[in-house]
Image (cartoon, rainbow, N blue to C red; front, side):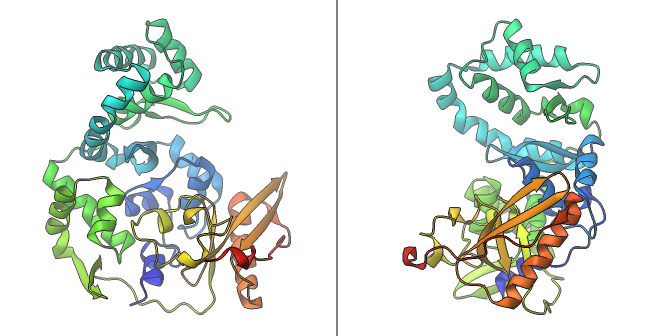
Length: 367
């Protein structure tokens, strides 16, 4: 079983079938989104055809929501899923952060409760406010937002299901009340939520292990195990080198002609969603300066393997891609990367210039 190729298919990178951004996000359960522009591409590359404006429009239309549902990290989630995911996943994050926020920032439960009331009044009636405007409303009510306190307050209110991101105002992100922004978000019982999360994870990201799911979700080992137990009936099981992997029972055969290449954004679910990333990331490249732990930089994937990183330069209507491969690329691989760059150019509605600087990093740094 080729774990990397199956993940490419199940994540719908090599087998892009979705028509809408909300379909992509619902399939994956969540898409990591602290790098906003990269997250737009993470959604777009899994669609049959998309431009960046389509994904932003889905956010403005409230079919996908940007918030902090797991691990204290920003993600996109489908509007219908945002409530049950927050209720399942954020209480543990909140509890784990409570003492640190009190010790470092003096933020106690009274400060959060006061901020909740202030924000609810400021946003009530469908209003959207930028981060600075939110800080001003909180400060006016007597709660300090200085020294990163404001960011932690907004994160906590989002985790509590009070606010979420709204539509962008120019280049500024805005916030809205979650109940007004996503009024049809469904609630589920705890067991149903655990089972649904496990099913979504292993169906969209398999083959994966229980340890991978535990890390990605931020659940306790006991809760992750319970979720898998309840989802097992809809999953297939494979054992490789003594390790048990779970995946969708209807996973398609991988018949890609080699080589196929993909330009993935930083923090893409293909690299970030697993505790053990060795199926796609060869550890021998870990000492290279552009390796970035395999998730912090945009990555070049050829035949399921991360073979380098890339940067973009976007000027007016032109896009330049600068690859930094870990090792010398074959001509066919370079051509495949050029094709992937052209697809990204279509997403940005930009003309793609010839690839820049495809020389590998110094091999002397490889251990």
